[in-house]
Amino acid sequence: MLEWAVKISCAAVLFTVISYVLPGGKLRKASLTTMSFIFLTLIMLPLKDVAADIINRKYILEEEKNSVINQVESGNINNQIIEEYKKRIADEIIRELEVNNFKCIKAFVSVDENTDSEKFGNVLNVVCDMTVKRENEKENSVDSIKVPQIVIDKSGIRIESDTEKEEVDLSDEETIIAEIVANVTGVDKSRILIRWSDLK
Image (cartoon, rainbow, N blue to C red; front, side):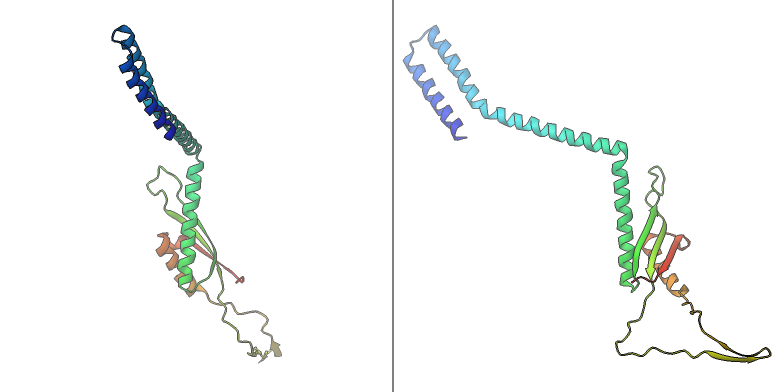
């Protein structure tokens, strides 16, 4: 910028000197016209860099626009958006269940991906992988011992061992979980699958 200012100052001084030194007539008019063009060119010199910068930026923006258009036309961007949308819904389900003291390892969400549908984006199904809540065991606690039952009937005396574990009735918990998931997603409770795991 300083160099440009020096060039303009020199041109202005030269222009003034020529206008005073040269005698009147055709030579003076031709010299002043030439000096005017040189002066104008020096003034416009920085605009060339600005114009080049604008053209470069316009070219870069055009390239980015074409890249985005290609992604949209190929469907990649739609898939990425839908996958991110499903991930956020799953994260919200896990967070809401955690607030209500349920541990969800993973939530799988399927949505209506048909962009022409009126229900586009609506949640269709939810699968929650839940862990069975276990009560914290005290370090110094003693495990309870079950004594086998002695059965006396017409066939004689026998001992029934309790080898089969009693299954915990999780229907109440599943109902609560389904209600929480339905409130978060708006999906029908019949479309919610809850799978239980022993993992913590």
